[in-house]
Image 1 (cartoon, rainbow, N blue to C red):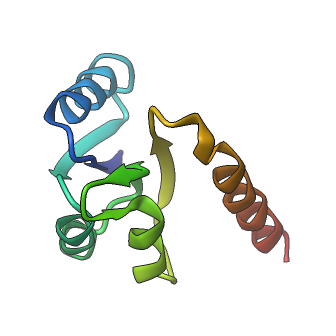
Image 2 (spheres, helix red, strand yellow):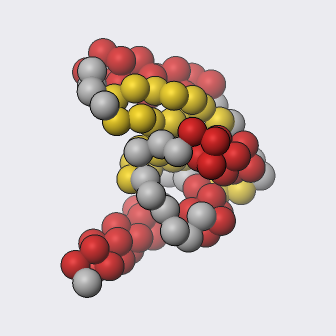
Image 3 (cartoon, rainbow, N blue to C red):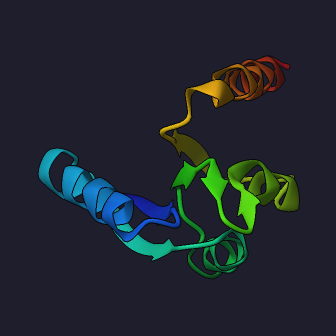
Length: 103
């Protein structure tokens, strides 16, 4: 079973992700949620998730800030955002990750 968390500043978004996972992904266990970059970092170190559903834009930081704070990640990232202007930056991270995994 995969262990997952959600890092998002909106309660409705957290609840939506949790509901979708519960309904359609029985092999994924939601083990926590955080509403800021700071609490997200703490939660990641506390529960050691396999998957992080990560919002890009939050009031006191971004999902990118969270990723920079944890350079050696042992989890997969699924970005969740309503802002399409982050698409290019998200794609560059994905491409870089794919490139590193090939080495």
